[in-house]
Image 1: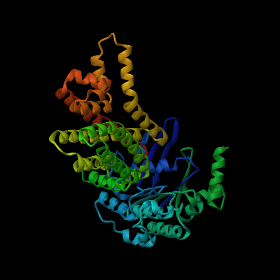
Image 2: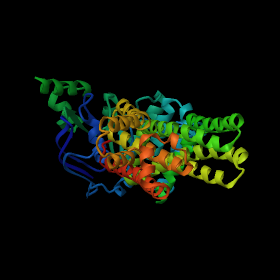
Image 3: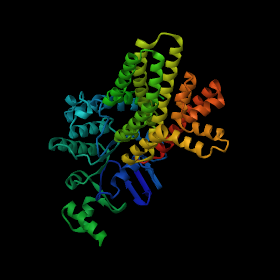
Image 4: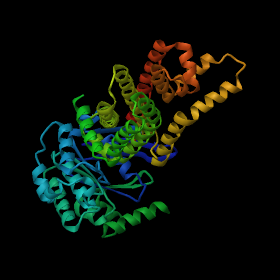
Length: 236
Length: 263
């Protein structure tokens, strides 16, 4: 589904990604983990075409990314920060995405009901809480039922009920053979949802495999401790 | 084109609800009405409005454009994760913001003029030239703001650069030209000074407005040289063409940068 080969990204002198090679298979939830500044968001944004790689190849569903935008029709993205034009209303934001896409979203109503967003859609964005903006972002990313979903810190800022609903929703996506990439600092979320993890440190992959393999390799029964072991191993 | 218009329409809707955009329109309306009340005669009002436009439009356009671009950064990211091209998002944002600010200026100045100031034909022409030049100045400084914001990731640097651009073009430039003219007064300076006057959009706007209005006192040094060299018709044509280049060049450079930019 996603093939990344020898991907490098530099911001001036800073190497954000170094020689990243990775395959992400269809129907799996892949967690991207690592400390702050390790390159998680840069990697995600490279897949989305928001960041231009310095070198290397990247393909989504066999299409090599070359600046064409149409491949993004099959991708839903929920950014780390849900910010929208402050003076527009929620339904206007949804309408804008619909007009730009030029098609009706099949799951819009279902998601609005799931996250109890209907009463909020008539309010201006500046009047919405951070959690409700985050919910709006979930609806936008998932309403077209795309095959590939990319979530950057999806549960950050959500109340426990909404967070649980979102996690259940992500599990249902997996059951429907969707591919999910999820960057998160919340290890319990990764452990609960992900099949595979990609551990980044200083822009390099330090581990790429299943959570089970990671635990076996480090001998740690808990994901968080297994990751700490790998990070300390690399620091030594 | 359809998507550009749609993004432009949403951007326009967002900006038209912005308090500062409304204050901008209201300010022009109040100043124009106030000037008609105090000065009575609409030729004088046109000149006063010109002076205000030459300072205020560039400042508001370049600052508002830069801040708007930074404020919408996450939203631009969201748009760029949809199946739309970068140039569509760029043009759409520019179109929306330009329509909002140009409309604000046209409504703020135009409606009071229609209500209080239109007595004879020459005034209509003055008003139309004023509205046209004010609109072009808005387009120029918005284009510069998009170039600045696309170039600098850091909001502080972007806003400082926008202010610096305004400060140089609106206030320092004519002084600098005057200094050069004084320092090199023994040399033939007409052609270099003409080139210098083309290099500043506010000077160009001033020349176009005042050559047409025939008020040499407000021309500034480069304006006076420009007028003497070219005369009215050729001068206005060259100045107007240069103004359009001033819209197109920063817009094109900004688009180039926007297409290569990392978000």
